[in-house]
Length: 238
Length: 313
Image 1 (cartoon, each protein chain N blue to C red):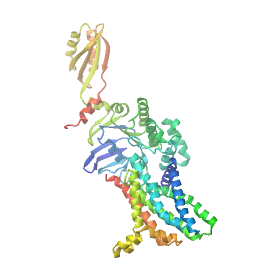
Image 2 (cartoon, rainbow over the protein chains, first blue to last red; image 1 turned 90 degrees about the vertical axis):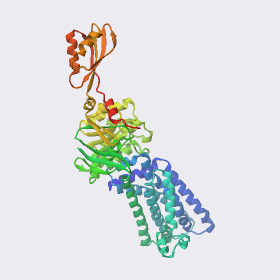
Image 3 (cartoon, rainbow over the protein chains, first blue to last red; image 1 turned 45 degrees about the horizontal axis):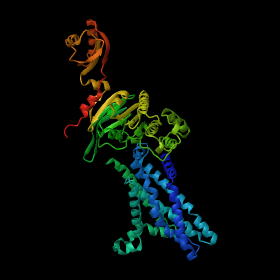
Image 4 (tube, rainbow over the protein chains, first blue to last red; image 1 turned 90 degrees about the horizontal axis):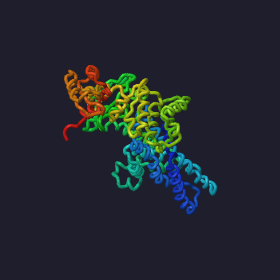
């Protein structure tokens, strides 16, 4: 437990040791606010639906950028040899890194709280969907993080980790969308709809936190963290 | 302290370490000597638990490397080749991180780090990001990191590469000092380093141990001893004649005239039989004045070259 804490603290701090963290956060907040506010005043509704509609697509690029470094850099610089010869279990290293990126994502989402505050000033929004939207965003983001982290462990090149991370999360997000499901064989439709990350996000975003959706996200996270531990063990096959 | 039995490591079709067995006792400084790519680093990576062996077994302090990997790792301090460190971190933060993962109680951390900083001479760079440090300082941070939990066994992979001569001497002194109380394994392809620091040497080539012993034993393995002799004598021929009849002397070669009747010679004979002493007595008997009588330093370089030369193309 203390190992996980030490790794989480180290990784979280290392985001801020370079300007990268500030650039990411600024970029995310500016882009999300601008894209959202552009439509907000046109529609004239005190709701964040537009924001949460954008979020999965923004996170699609934001999250792999947050995770691409975590393993790829260790491999590139050889520090993984240092890390894995410390008395740390593989899963502790994986969970520590995941939690650090999760804290970073949560921090970014918390900073975007200026948007609902502003809406509350100019109108009278329904808090349910906003809170639900944020819970959904955290869960969706965490699932993206686990995928991005796993992908990062497969390569020592951060750019490749980023691109594959985007493609992988995009694939998992889109697989349940109507236009994919439409062309799929009939028997697969319910499976695809369940696997697709988007649908689960939409239902939480309506303000309905269903345990099935929560369990879905937790299993995705658990699955990819497990794969990550396995890919660390695979250094033994090389 | 360490027991390695029939250890092999294959990477696909490549055999990096091939059926290696050796023991290291407590308080010994063991050097792995070998050309680049001989399997030194791979052996160390297996011993430190970074990669598992393909076959064979290794025990550290009686603990099996496979089943007790975590306990083994707790007892080892490891400096990987070229000291990979987290460049973005400041030295002090990095050492704090290592201390916390190494399970050093929070109350002792500052004290421990302070000791390491003094011992490795890091006072000036403590607040600097690691990637701003020179190679020598990085290497010392790597050493501080490896020693912070006071391990019984230190594994140092090429601890002096990239350092300047002064730093090399400092690090060697540090290793010798450590060797008094701890077990140290270090690898190098620099021969004087082995002679300067190691109590015992394993010469590794193509993944196999090709020789082992103290640096002196290995050098004498050639069976020859060379002595430089300069004497004031009536003539060169007289000396050659006198020495040539000595039973220990195999070859006398004249190296020139040192001026004022001094002649210089290089004499070779079998090692370990007291060639130097025999020459001294010969000189005294003949009434020559000795101005130099110096055994040549045992030459590990020749042994190394002979053992690790690759035959064929």
